[in-house]
Image (cartoon, rainbow, N blue to C red; front, side, top):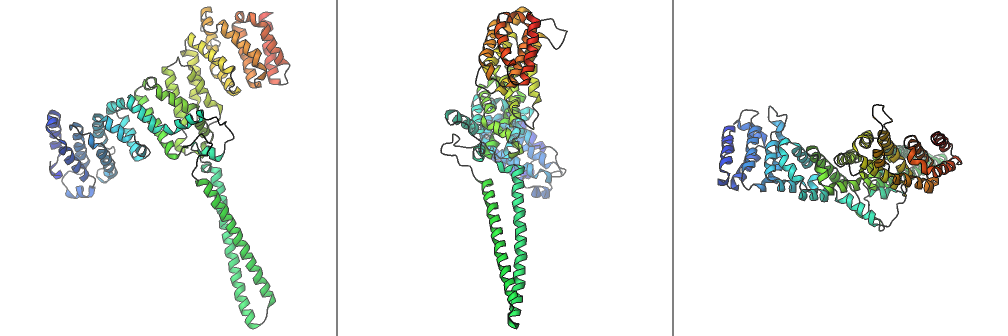
Length: 553
């Protein structure tokens, strides 16, 4: 073992079996010697020139040396050295011929890290390493491997979860907390306020085009200045020749005009250069938090990268353990904060001004929340949270969220949970929330739920029993709905009013008996709508009046 040139695959396999049987007989000096041998293989020219092994076997020998570290006792101190050696070996792997298509070093490295999970997680969960693709990509690949189950289990533990939240999501969560504690109202967004959420408006195509126009203008004015300088030079020479021969006043006048043209061209060029410098300074400035801003530590590219890596790690853990989110309330709570946050909303609105790598923030969070909701259908608040994604247009396809909401309220929720959805909707309807959110709640949650309850989409189901209807739409819920309509109905947006009239129409058609005692309040609400100036609401109002007459008269 003293000479790396004496190592063969057979010898290393034998040493592996010996270590498996008598690992306690070896000390850490063996690991140091093996690490020294591994470093030799990071110099492929010397290894190939020695012609000790069959061409192509050199990486296999290095991998066999790697494999011994998982059998060494008390070898946690080699985590950093082995990870860095793996990166170096993979960098020079193509120089060994024939070249391996898949790295032979990651499997033995994952075996070693499985035995030293605490040291491995502590090494990789550092800001400067998670922000470095060289380390973060390696760590994600190791987590995904089938043999890395012990490492994933440790990463799912309480200690690592807290560490992950502190490292990857500390900045965005701190911004959310500072906004909640601040009494400063939300005003008009500016470049400075957007930059606090990691949005650089100068990354957008329109801003880049603006800079390009200024650059082209500088080039044109520089070319114009060069022409004027040439003209001045020619006139100066002509003036010298003319002055030696005879006095030529016309030449003097032309020379003075040329000099003035050069001065004007210089001034125009300098002014354009100053404008370009000003634009560049605005594009590259570092955002300093305002004295009155709640966001004292703004999102930076590093913070966005850490958040992205945190998402990817959790994504891997969920893919191998569907119970990860339900078992980690702190992670779910943090992700729901991020989902509701102003920063995520602004970053989605200003996609073109964000690096493409971070465009998937809302998509990843939506997948997390749908996964959590599948495992916890009793938490109906998540369904109303997911609706937020449809409040603004996006280039990302979120149709899967709409389909999930439809399937959940139609087929998954129990009668008691459907009642909770109705109560949650009534709470939203009577709140100061936006009418757009209330409208989407009706369209994506209440309507599909009622359609499935009344089985209006198919004739193959028997009608719901009275007991089922009482569970989903108890008398108290109907009463609360009518009270809200009578009290706040006149203040709703016409679009929301139309949707509420559709709701009344569905209820009149299917549960007329429950509405008998509320006939007077309903017709009063509808009559007020018929007196409005909006033609759309009038149209729906007449439809509901027709339904009302058909049901009760």
